[in-house]
Amino acid sequence: MLKKTNIFIVLLIVVGSLSVRAQHIAINNNLLFDLAGTFSAGVEIPLSKSNTLELYGSIRPWKREDESVHKHWTAQAQFRIWPCQVMNGFFWGPYAHGGQFNLGNKDVLFGLLKGLKPNRYEGWFLGGGLGVGYEYALARHWNVGAEIGAGYTYINYKKYACEKCGAQMDDNDYHYIGISRLGLSIIYVF
Image 1 (cartoon, rainbow, N blue to C red):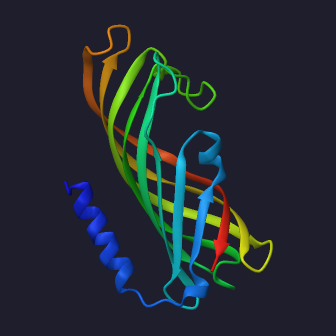
Image 2 (image 1 turned 30 degrees about the vertical axis):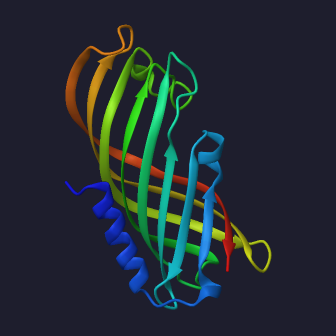
Image 3 (image 1 turned 180 degrees about the vertical axis):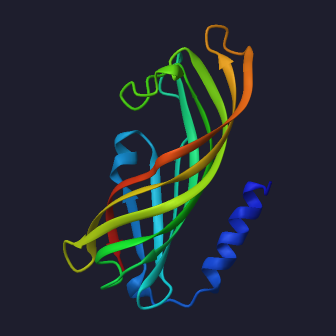
């Protein structure tokens, strides 16, 4: 598996080799991640008159409470197809994502993932899917956007008992199929 540094260098080379005009570059922030206490940011660059590439990342590096943990980082890339106008209106396209997590002794997704409460899970994930969304221009440089995506994610994890904070219980993987991308973003277009 590639190291984080190698992935970062490859992304810089890809982004640096693209020829773009500054007035069409956009930066964005996912407000849903902000509500969850996660820093997030993305950049979107045009590839042609009807296609863009969005590179997006998020990080939550700290623990909120001593008895629970919720740390993670993610990186995502999406090739977007705009049928009408780039960075305005309907779009769709494939995406890929990956990252690492350390999550435990916490109710997640309003109790939908009930098995997480008594344990801690640490691992990594890699996957992709297809997303659809819509961006609406609020002003000359400001957009708001919404997106949902579904696909496949491979998750490799180690399970630990939270009561003793350290005893490893399991080393396993999980194959997830379902919603894996959700966003409500504020966007600034240069």
